[in-house]
Image (tube, rainbow, N blue to C red):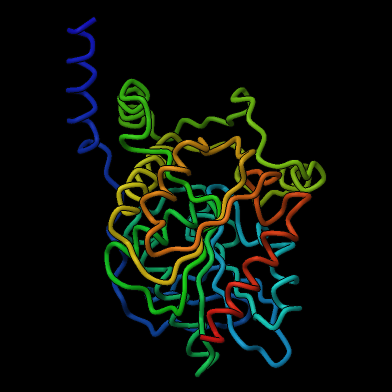
Length: 306
């Protein structure tokens, strides 16, 4: 048993170096919004959905989770817009209508795109306070970007943050994933056997299943990529500070609630933490979504009033 543990530990330490992802692309363009897309710094076009508010008092850049796209904010966008907050939900690189669908672009490229979208939204809305709201992997991305350097936003909303990676996962699972992604990076898994439920909004889950822009079969190297990102996000929770609101549900069946509680504990001294008894992982789309959606609107209103 000890020999097996030593062997797996060795593999887990060495093999991550065998699977690498691209560096962030060179910056050749000023990011801007154009014809339903955000043009990033390398000219890549990232899908964009907008819900403009009348007499907007603020704007939100909305960042979806793994295998999803801007449709994750189908309910949140109109709700926040009706409360005076314009919403800009973009498809991350590798997802939805954006370039390289189905391929993991690397954390550096994703963070660079996040900053580009924020800059593009600020350029289109001069003088308007801008917030960033993430869901799941989107929250992971925001957290790792904040650890890297401050984001040009007035506040941060972390919905059901993806923090189940790195040391938060079994060393045996991590070793097996690294080995599999090294030798068969293009092999795909669907996750259908996991038996986990993302939301109690069954109609919404069915629409996701039927939507061709939602990735159903995930490449092994992409699974490894998001596992690394989530591990980095959990580590970042010890370091990031600022105007932060974290929300999660006690019924989350995707990210272990214990890890969400630990993350909240790390953030608690400078952040606002809201936990919803009837909330699932798709906290902005669940049947009880109006409660957290209103909480976000109220938090922004209170922040603007300070």
